[in-house]
Image (cartoon, rainbow, N blue to C red):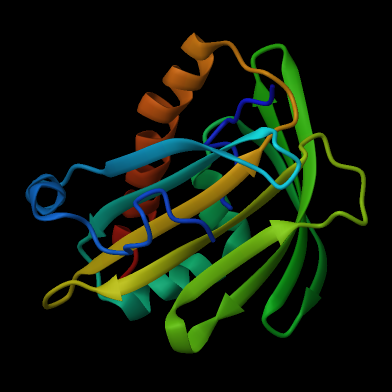
Length: 195
């Protein structure tokens, strides 16, 4: 069976049955400055387990400012817990090919993503570049930045990830309860540091 690390990548699947927006009870937490994280296990096309996640945080900056921060990809991805290295291999208009090295305890994972910027939607999407050697089986995901009242942005993060190897339940729990909220808070701090 394959188990998933739902936070290793900054890196479109819905963990909430297809809705992009937080539920009313989640909005209360978001308004209090807390991140909201939803995760679930799913199955990939070959029947292996894969994880899906959706997470939210409210950023006290307008969407244009947050979008500018997201476009500075090297700085933006520094929010990823356990990230050891990121190298932009190719740049083309609104696309990047990016190598990532992420530490996971005694193991490091290497993978390359094709990242696309969608300015009209204020969205960043990615998928695994399967033409290159990767230490994970598959991933896709998005960041979206939605207006949320005057001068504020709702950041919505989605991920589908199949590591291709089992993880101990305690480590999976730690990553989803600590690393993902930590990443959201780091993105919030980074974006809020801009004028």
